[in-house]
Length: 197
Picture 1: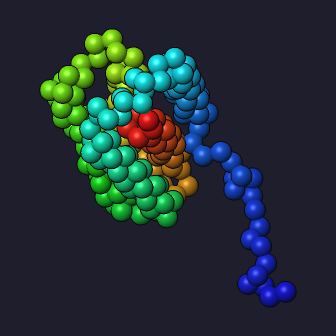
Picture 2: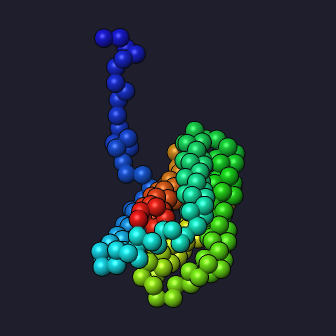
């Protein structure tokens, strides 16, 4: 066997869970919260199939697609920032984080215009079951995105002051875990509300 084909030695750090315990407790709470909301969604859907069949037709699919692209793109930029920091490229990491923030801030902007569009088209959350499920899920997700954007600013400030390096980037990694989890939740919300009939 040639030396080039030998497996690389592994260390305990190779098998560690990314981030830190605190962020995973937060992510677990977030996922539990949304799991319960999805359970309510499916119970409501089972009892009001017609409302959930016609519901997606009332929404702005363009807004849903736009926010899906925003979340995916921002998450990609965060992943690139983390990769850059792992190689001690602080300036490159900051550039990726600026792109991630600039993209991510598009999410609440799109939500603002989507809300105006909804109200103009009579989707005011007036007690109709699909509308209530839509507003409850999407506004809760918007809150988590808001927390993520604030966390992103904090991580950017820490990176700019030299708090992270290739040997210590746990804070950046923890934020990336949270942002990807928030992205994952949106990837479940989007088809349930905007596509599935």
